[in-house]
Image (cartoon, rainbow, N blue to C red; front, side):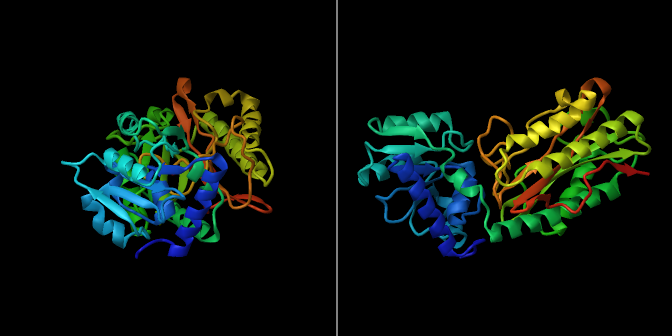
Length: 383
C-alpha cells in the first residue's frame, strides 16, 4: 500500500467523520470530493474525472468505494480501501449501484449527507440519485469532512513545509528567467520545470504569469504575450507534496518601478504583514481582512482588492486548492494552532493599468502565525 500515511491514520479519520455524522443526525455520507476521498483513504488518481464515491455509515462494516473498472489497480495499490465496487462506464449506472448499496444496508429511507458543493457531483447525478432513492432524505453535508481537515497534524504540516520549499524554488526560477522578450507561457513553463525538479506533484491550478496591462487580470492564464521593459509581472503557483499544497504569489517589475507601483507595493507588503501578525489563536479569521483593508485605505486601495484575503489550505486536486474556511468577516471560524491558510490581498488597479499579487501559505502556531515561504513579501525588481 503506497500512501502518504499509515492505515491507522486513515482509520482514525474515518472514525472522526463518523462522530461528526452522529452529531448531525446523519445515517450515511456519500463522499465525492477527490481531496476528501484521498484524506480518508489515501486514494490518489485522476479517476475523479468520472463518477466515484466513498460511502461511510455505521451500518457498513467498512467504507465502500465505487469507481470505474480502470481504477482497480490504483484502488488496491494506492489506498487503504478494503471494499470496492468497480463499474463499467459503458454499461452501468454508478448512481444505481450507490442506491442499491444503500438499500441493501437498510439506508433506503435514511438521512444521507451529500457533498452538494463538489464539482465532481453534478446536478444530473443528484437528480438521478433522487430518482433511485425517492424515500431517502438527502441534505448538504459538504463541510463534514472539510471541517475535520482544518487542523493539520505534524505530518501534514511537514508535507506543506516541503511543498513551500518547492514553491520557493519555482519562484526563484521565475525571477531568474524574467527578461524583455520572454513570453508568459515560457515563464510558466520554466516554473513548471523547476517545480518538477524540486519534487512537486502536479498542482490543482497550473503556474500563472501575466505581464503589463494583463497584470490587472488576477486569474488570467499565461499567454504568448512577451514581457517588455517597465512591465509589472504577476506570478502564482503552488508546490505539492503528497497532494498537500503550499501556494506562493509575487510581483516583479522589469527595470525601475514607477513611483506609483512602488507606493502601492510598499503599502501592500505592510498590509500583508499586518494580516499575518493578527492571525493569532483565538482571533476571528475576519480580523485579518479588516486589518488589511484599514492599511490599504490610507490611499484608498481596498476597493481594488480582487477577492477575500485568504482561505484554508491543504489537500487539493483540480480545479481548486481552496479548503472550507474563508478568511473574511462572514466566516465564523477563529484561528487555531496548526491551521494552514493563505494570506493574499491581491490588487487590480485596472484604471491605472497594473495589478500586484502577494500571497503566501501561512501556518498558525501557539505563539502566532508565520509564512512558510523563505522569500520576502516584497516587490522584486529585475534589473
